[in-house]
Length: 597
Image 1 (cartoon, one colour):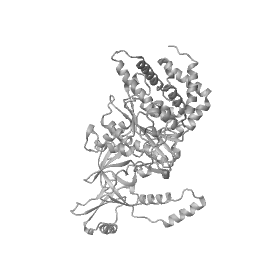
Image 2 (cartoon, one colour):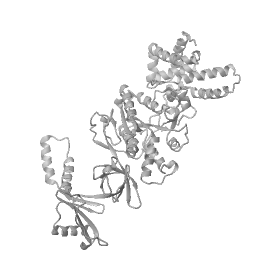
Image 3 (cartoon, one colour):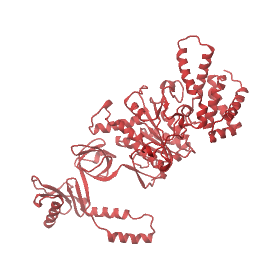
Image 4 (cartoon, helix red, strand yellow):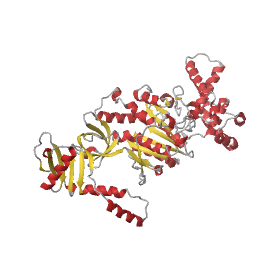
């Protein structure tokens, strides 16, 4: 018989306490009187006002499972087994076998069965990835709840009418109206340990790369308060991306939040991957969060990182496009929890959120399913808080907390270059700068297609080494002048020699800033190129040949002047003497060669 089979159900009287008893064998009259007595004392009512509803439930095995409103008292054999299992699991794991036997005996002798009291709610309605329940009046926002079929959910909406909105982390097919749900009294989190490096996990912390279990014991919360001002210190250490245009003009510091923004298919993910590849050997833990990406795309990214040896220090948190909106919603928080774990252990971390536009869409879907009032572009009113509480957790911690850092490179997709749209403007206001990728530059062959005029780093030269700060010079100003002269030259007027030279110099700079994917530059290569460019050495080279000459020049310089490269790479200190030696070598290279069109 089903669990809903009723032995007896008297007509309810007004002002009665309804007590539902699930069991295999109905209680005797003496047991019923005792139950009435206990419940009347527990809820401060008269015994004659206690109504007993007895239902047959084979899962109880023996004893009684009692429900009073949203309270549950599990006095069944199965409940006793669960309590004893928890008692045994609490024993020390690292114990010698002979001592374990005595500990078990002591635990069994001292085991005392409690009443098994817990709060229980009931499903009112269930839809696509969300459920609405009543009961569980003491539940808190973000708490994990457990449905009777084993599916977990997270409290997302606590309403004034006593109902609660739950987002589901599983298939909602097996959840029906009046299904039971219980509290776990734990907020959402993932299991984590150092063994997570090199793995791909889902937002719940389960490995999905086919390489077996991670065996992580520590449970780390998905959400926690951002470090306070007193727990931080100023951003002042560079996190080099290996991309010349970024490291020279829009430097990223450890603990900074730098937005990568642009239209679809303009190289946003490529910049993020190059930044990860450039951390090899620099003791930086990298986390790549894929939000609503194709599984094939994430597999390709993992293969690129593995082939380059970058998976040794990287974790991929993936929520596929086929996953439920609830999993896509918690994915960036799961990645942030992984980064925080290493940051609070004194490590420097880099986290990529790819991308937060899709994250906002997933949150909008959940909010609409929970019947929240839509606002601008149908997004809920708290969508700003969605990303601010995520990105504010990036920080450079103080020395008292270990000096670790979390650097965030969130990615946002625009439509037709519209940076004034709702989600882009929200995230721009949260971050410490943005790298704007221009589709016109991208299709013109400029890779990375960084728009120098719209990109900015609010940390600036504080996130650069001394030698890079001095080597950059007036590069950004020269590029700005080049853009203005390009616009002026389109009117067809005569240009004097100085303007023609400036245009030629600017075109050469644009060519020097071009980089192929998966080819990050070291610090000495960037310094040598910048000094040579500002000395106008590349103006002797036809524009179409600059890419080939640049590669040949760097190879020659590295082979013949290794002492200078080591000084630039490791000492990181600028001096006029070092600059003169670098320029002397560069001038000798260009003087000995001719470059024909």
